Length: 571
Image (cartoon, rainbow, N blue to C red; front, side, top):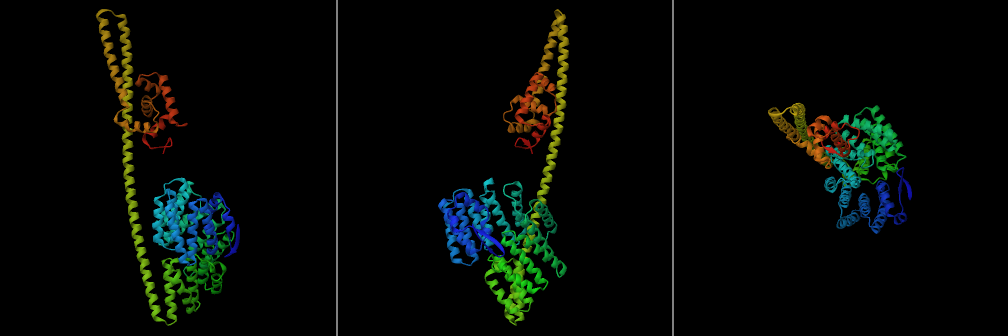
């Protein structure tokens, strides 16, 4: 591995010879370590080409796609459009080699990430949503799916569609909390930033507090630096002309930069420096502001949003310092080449600065033209904001409708459960009554049998006829008892039990129903005309098959009959 200091951050990348000699496992490990986050575009292209060649020789399609995507992004950042187009054609030709859903998922993920990096947000959303269609919720694809969700979050966020951005961020957080992908501070940071930009300060504060707690557990400098950046942004957003708050925000941003000195995360360093620039400019400390803008970090950056933000801040600085001609010279290239790296509000600021600069230079026609562009951009922003609010209102309406439906379903479920409990109570009472009647008839039968044994003639004849009538009545009672468990009230219960444990026999199912009715083994034995020991044996078999653990069998059966089953336990 070789490395160099650039932008005050150590950038690490493999040299060409090491890539060419790596095994497939080593390449895959390098891929997962996030190599595309490090390195300047020129050096990264050299690495990516060697990376692609080695991946192709080993037949690793995923890594070859990653290498070509790296080349496209790097060439695009250097505005080498013809070379980027050539690489893009080679990347698109890889589609003919795709076979599995996972390969298609990664293919569209790379295309979407590329479009998002080039600020083609509509294309990015289209490609990434296509990638979502190929996600089959398998654990192996979770990392790729998280990358897709990150891309959708960034694309929607840059488009000002905060509800959609938040939706995909929360999906990534769910994947992290479930253990499907490793935890990353960036996801929590994005969620807090989205809430902050959307004006929901309460939820933003909740995420920042959560990040602080998480930071204490992880002892992660990058995590802590992101928290500091959120705090600094929040202070500057609400500071207006309060110099004390602006100075506090500047100090926090400086703390973040010190934390990031130990991290290889160049874009976050630039973000922290740009926050410092904004604070220093508002404090009218122009020399300090110019020193950072012309420093090695921001001056050598090639990522579109960093370049565009630097040029915008530089133009504003020059205008406020009484140098309108220099401001125009700095901002016109921004408008021509890097405007795609800015969001709507920043574009408005650029138009406003150019309009004021041309006005100070007495170029009224050009000042009027940029004033017109400013108003058009503002109108577009208001239109997007209006559409966003309409979309939010529709979402809230759907949420309220869904909540009403859920409430109605809960009421229906409660009524059904009440009805089942009432039916169970009546059936239990009837079963017990039948059992008692049977015991009484059996007692009477025994008494008459004793009398018949001592009688002769006509008296014995009548006693035997009476015994036969009692036997018939007992048979009727036994038949009624046997039919109780197949009554309509028990159909769903028997279905759930049979589905959950097909090994249960017909007799064991009947015993389960009676246990669920809170009958004792003795009462069940009487109803089913079995011995007490036989029912106890059935209970042991039922416990062995259902595996309720140490729980009471009757209580377990009660829940099992009423709820869905998941992995052998009620949800």
